[in-house]
Length: 400
Image 1: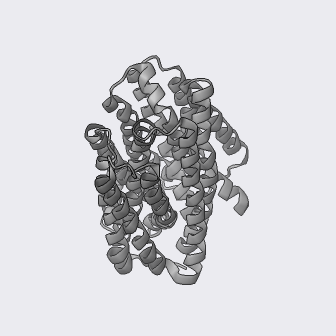
Image 2 (image 1 turned 180 degrees about the horizontal axis):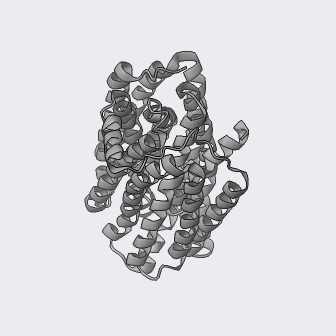
Image 3 (image 1 turned 90 degrees about the horizontal axis):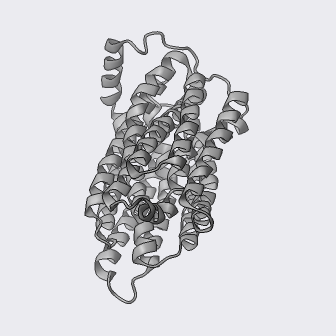
């Protein structure tokens, strides 16, 4: 496959998770009103998707090491299309939650295989650059998603917004079926043996480089998730932003993420991994501190507005464009023969943390931005400490 095709496929496969959430976000208040559901149940549609996303990767990873990336991708995307149709037709909140569980399981196959494909084809440093290119493509896709979700919800219905996921999934499935070629160097016939599988999990989980980059990618993802899961309620319901304007805010967020990934590629060449991540850690911590300080000092004051939430998030997303590609590629870098299993375990850790935060956020949200700001600050602090300490000590993937 050509490098361009690899980047396009990475953008689609990695982008399926933010597409599934970003199109959905502007529709949340309307969905909540239509299905007459409490806040905790609405947040469960996020948390359940993330739990299925993370847990399913523990199954998809070994399966892809045993049978190859292509059959797992085709099965996963077919499941995604069917689950998206079920979301569109869901008559109640419980039915929607179960459809989102199926979506999450399908997303697990796509994202896990995307990370494994990068390790199949490239050494770690080049893999980080390719991952950054793929994530830049993800950003381009994400720019469209929230405005599209807002417009479809305003003009038609929240079910119309969910229908966009069916179209995205079907298009990706067709491209994979026609153009994707197997990337795994050699299938592992022992990948599903219980004893071997357990030993591999232990070997991966004990590796300091895996631990380091999993903390980095998990922290960065969960901090972003906190903003995404709370933003529509804080910005639309509490601060009075329209759905269309909210979509524009999210488009700006995605555009700045693209800027961050472009900066990541250039800084990796100039500074290397350690120095690049070290610098991005300062940006992340500054964003978390600013978000929390403004929420505590400003909520209820005349000067507090949308900008007090969006400005810190925009600062964060620039550094996220560094931490995500480096973290995702770095976590699987030490395991060229176990890329599927390593990718799966990294994804499971990330989504498990996001699931826990989703449950907490559903109970803690009180109509103010303060609970989300507190969680955001805590995870930004973890990211910064990881960037300043563990990455400096264990960040060498041993490849150039």
